[in-house]
Length: 197
Image (cartoon, rainbow, N blue to C red; front, side, top):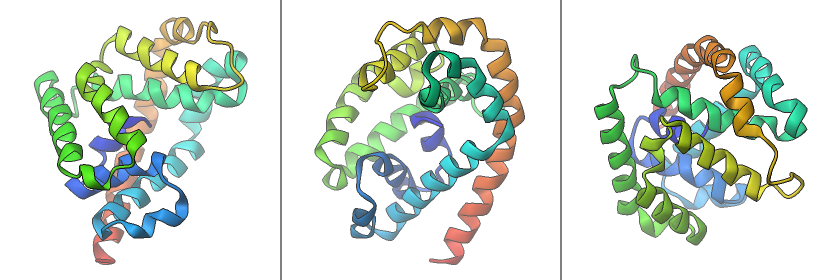
């Protein structure tokens, strides 16, 4: 799961912040944040663990593994945001737009807690409206290229986006088999977090 899914699978503003923080902090730093943000960090990790172990995600990785081997999971995370963004059972396009604007607003309101590299990314994310534009082929192409550019051991011209387009129907089926299970899991995790407050 990537930024859109993690933000959507949050139950409070502080959880949204924590979900974003997880990718930008060291483990020992997590306890320096307010409890609600720590809950978001915990939620992010629970989502990642559940995702990595789900049979439908194992199947989806087969689309990218021949091209990128161990990096397949990173490209699945990006790809799943495309299907989340186009899932009308979750939100209408107008509701996804409102969600995206809310996430940017929440992150900006909690800017004092964000590391500099997250602040820089937030500025680009908001400027180009990444969260909303994950619904578009060109938005996912941009995100896939971004992962390729950051990957130290991958050639920047590997046709990952072409593989995404070619296997979009297969990936959609994997999403359909996976995401309802994730929704149930996340609700259970949130219940536990609330009991711990």
